[in-house]
Length: 134
Image (cartoon, rainbow, N blue to C red; front, side, top):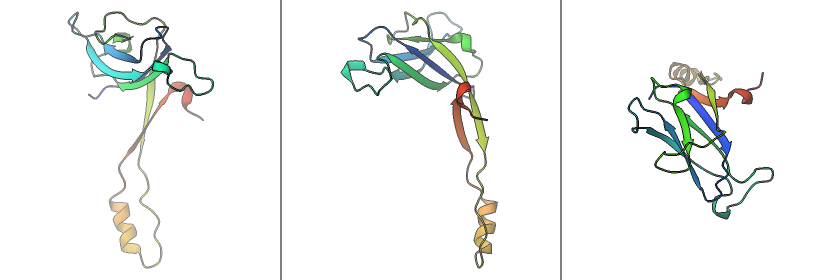
């Protein structure tokens, strides 16, 4: 998969549901692709943090190349038969940057040169559009 990252969120009214399933409509009808699963808050009487309504979900996933946001749908059944209403699909912004290898100190010039030559791997941060500061 080398597609873009997306987030789906919403509040499910089926109080028996514990999991939501994120799907992508395939080119062949009836052959949809299961992309991800996510837990529903308060499912099965589990703890609810203050201010978080029962039934809320938010799942981040990678969409396969060749598909668009319009192809995404969410269900509370593992067969993908009945899409949930009022689901928000949000593209994520992915930021990649290199971390510095450290600073040189007296007597450690060779170590500092090695750090610079072999910088640490890229870090990828995923955030929803409204979650980035200026």
